[in-house]
Length: 169
Image 1: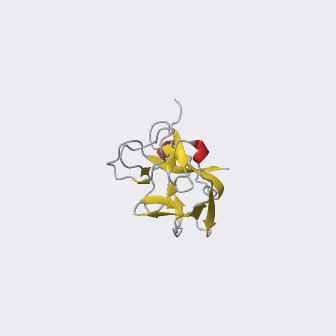
Image 2: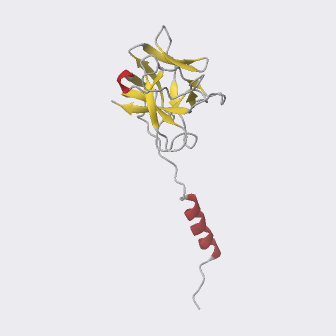
Image 3: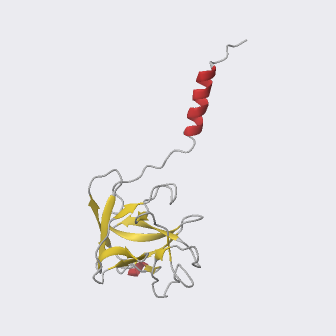
């Protein structure tokens, strides 16, 4: 008969196996800094890329109208924070809406912690919110249609909900 491993060793092996089955996704500390586009990724299914934001912060599916944003890191905390600006001016969240320019004062954004966003992607966060949608028929807008405003979801919108992600340019 073969000797049995001590119960404590067997318990440790089982614990190690079950805790490493779902590793955490490492978070970037460089997302949303430098120059890039704000891309709209669907929060479900295949997390399809559903367009981008214009310089004014409106949702479009016409890549020719995507804005280029500049992200500037703030501080060196373990939770990265940053400001965003575009050709229209500083970006902010006001009344739950994402806007840039028009005399807006910029705000401090952060990165949404996984697992409530898209695995392996940095997703924009402001306070405790991040998931965005559009009013009315909802989004994404059809190619050739006017760009739509985006705001934090209220779960009453029609259409797809999106996370704002970063694509460096």
